[in-house]
Length: 441
Length: 128
Image (cartoon, rainbow over all chains, first blue to last red; front, side):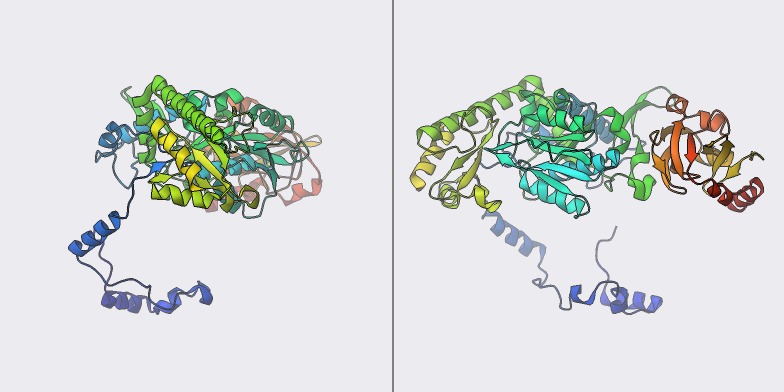
């Protein structure tokens, strides 16, 4: 295939054939949105020059010690993962779905779905969608389609980025009620959840790291016939109650922590699970196991009639693809770690997080949303009297990313730093962090 | 293609049978043969108010999904629960065992807007 763009002569020839000027072809775009000047790009470079340029940029990369999370976490990735995901059969920009040529890919999808289903205790998992934010937004749309109701009730404890994506999806066409946080926990407000409500959405652990009272939300949603939706942390499920045990209707997550590197803007992994009875309203692709005409086990895409290419405008979702390479990484991660390995990761993560919280308290920091110091998994908020931004700046000087400045989301969260821990952090790093934060003031 | 003389039809290939104060609705022999193997139905809830010509459910075959439209406005009084386990009844016997919903019409005059058997025959001859 030729990726060299057409020349100006070729373009003029094409326009001559159709008998139109280039301006005419763009007439559907409003005048004020049209770019009248050429894009401000530097002139073309040779391969060698490009390489030099990229190497120069690469030098700006810094290996930091991460205490920032907020949905993306610095877990260890076993090196076997990149050897398998890097195989050319898997490492392709295009996800091959044809069963005649893609048994490996389809089986990997099926295994991924089965493992996610086991991990979450949910009956059905799809072959993945883009990321945690889209997974949760698609869940909301699915609930609206299932219940044929309009109102959506969201907890303020949901990742603020996810909330923005949900609001973009709903585009003001559906009424949204927010459940406020009180002392860092969602405060159930029975008046807001009523017979008009399509779904009640909660994140657990919530964005501030706290473990929510999920059961009471599930019960409340049930009592008015609404669906309950839970956004979870996949690593936490090794030691916390699963979405299946809470009996939620839809459970979604960002799957990056399962063997996928942290990178700005992704590619990440949207985990999507639900109950079997909702399978026909579920977005995304689904692989199934079957037998061929000689009785041999094989894998195919199933229930495609749900999807947009067949169902057109009546489909629940416009998503007709999945994050295959990331889903494969997650399946590999789960099989390499196993049940015990995953428990070990979760236990170390939570114990180190609690150790850090304790050390910060001993150093006279206040943890405004963790008065009893118990109900959090890996993440918590610490008040920085001299300002979160200054803490972050002084951390960077020492090679530490000390956390997320919550003040950028809400006025009431000013001077609060969201700190997150994984199994990768050593005692020395944790103690250093306490020292950095103590001295930065 | 079987077209029964004692039924009324819609342009979307549903049939309507008057039965006392209710009407029974299903899809025609032509519709089931076009869809082929039907594997799942999404049906309205009993008690739901429906409007003539609006989608009230969907019929899923192996390679296509088709909406089911209300032949008349009114209230759903019964759905054929046997289809849940045996959706293939629509393929086997579209006019009897494969009936889909019963509606209590709110406006009996709407029946006059439906197609007579001869008109429906013309319609599918054109489509073929």
